Image (cartoon, rainbow, N blue to C red; front, side, top):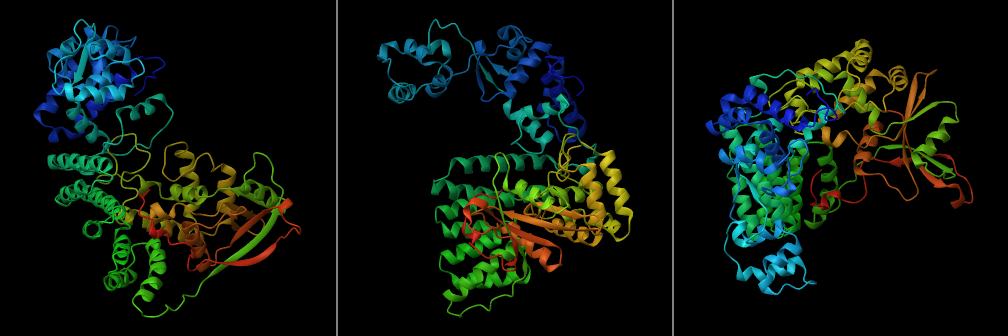
Amino acid sequence: MSTSPLDNPFYYLENFRQVLSWIGQRYDDLLDDEERRFIEDFARLPQPAQALLVRMVMRKGLLFRASKLTYAEIGDARQAAVPLLECGWVDGQPHLDLQALFGLLRKDELSLCFKTHGVKRAEKKADLLERLRPLHEHIQPLDQWFAGFDEVVFALQVMPLCDRLRLLYFGNLYQEWSEFVLADLGIYRYEKVEFSAESRGISQREDIDICLHLHSCREALDQALNEREQLDELASRALAIRTDNPWLAMRRGKLLFRIGQQAERLQQWPLALSVYAQSSYPGARVRRIRVLERSEQYAEAMTLLQQAQALPENDEETQHLLRIHPRLQRKLGHGAVRKRSTRTVKRLDVSVTPLPDYSVERLIQLHLAEEGSEVHYVENALINSLFGLLCWPAVFAPLPGAFFHPFHSAPSDLYSPDFYQRRAALFDECLTQLDDKRYLEVMRSTYVNKFGLQSPFVFWGTLTPTLLEQALHCLPAQHLKRWFSRLLQDIKANRTGMPDLIQFYPEQRSYRMIEVKGPGDRLQDNQLRWLDFCAEHEMPVVVCYVQWAEEVTIAKSGYDSVPVGDAGGYDSSESAGPAA
């Protein structure tokens, strides 16, 4: 994709051609006759016809007024559409129902079309539709709806086929055709991943049908937010899906998890329990425990909780279980749970004067820098970036289902529970370099050779050469290894919640991290888990609580401690909201 749209008005067509070529080369054995014929016939069309089809495919909907398809590089849309009409990819006289007609015509045009019905100027378009609906339940072409109206409507006929091709290219159906255009603009640069038949996430024709079925179920879920009967039927459809493809099995698990969340909102406890029990998606087990508790099945909830405590899926689940356990104990009449001993981190109280356009983190950065040390506002960027530099080969390993096309900024399975397990040997090899000084050269080399390439971990805008060198000088390799290992336990949960600031003491080759909390702010769950982890491994970290100088009579600046071991506070597992 070498030509910029600034130079080539058909840039979108050039991209589409290359996508079809990629699909033909990579998935020829999975294509059916109709898809192969489409790819071959598309190449034979005149350029204006190709461009018009792509424009329609990339727009929303399936019905288009010819007068609205105005593109300078295409010219007359009616003329460009002739080859598309001849091959049946576009219908030039589609039968329209009243709803479709109203979607195409303006209010003034509808007034002329239905002038015998006494359309009032003040009557809203939606009200007119409802008034006319019982009188016009038939479907017919536009010229029969509106005689003498000089307009042509095109109906796109190949969208299901194009959706299947889009699925093969992106590996999903939530990304639109227009997204790959950004690569052509030169805005982003991507790692070159080695593709092979073995690295395909979709390896048989049946996988395409299953993926389309899953997508259809997800769309139906979005439309059935408060329909109990529809949710029951949808759950049955999802539970009936069977696949040996790990990539698709994870998608099925996520769909069941979301159906369970919706069942909870509607207080359909048996349905929620049924789908959660068959979902492998992270968090499904703790949701089952909460549903059992809310439906007063306390003994069953305690049994499942004890099973989860014996083998928790991640730190987040452990945190939820610690909060649920005391409630279940009380409800079962077992008495209070012996309180778990808590770890603490240092607390620093500081009062500062607010400044316009300065966040509280920036103010504390300036305040601490006055001590003569190097202080950086890094939040999640530094540890993630160092991990990304060291583990670059493992992150971009071409495993099945990880990469579908050349423009991935991250593996498709980045947040899957088995992301690490599938690459364990590769990641372990990378982390072993922290046992000697090899990691220093690896990180520096990756920084230079991969600079600017899209990565799910490396924050190029934050990780300056100076920050990189200070980090490599002051951060012990043992601490890096512990951070990276924890990150790999649960990428989705553990890549956030890290302290806001890092303070380097180059002469001592030491550091400390500072989590900043402004007036009224509180520690969040993922932050508590990170602080607890640092306290457990005796890593230098403090929580800085800030007050505005004019709000206190005595400026307080000193140390205390903050309990973090039990990650106290509200029970976030109460929420059945959508997972991120």
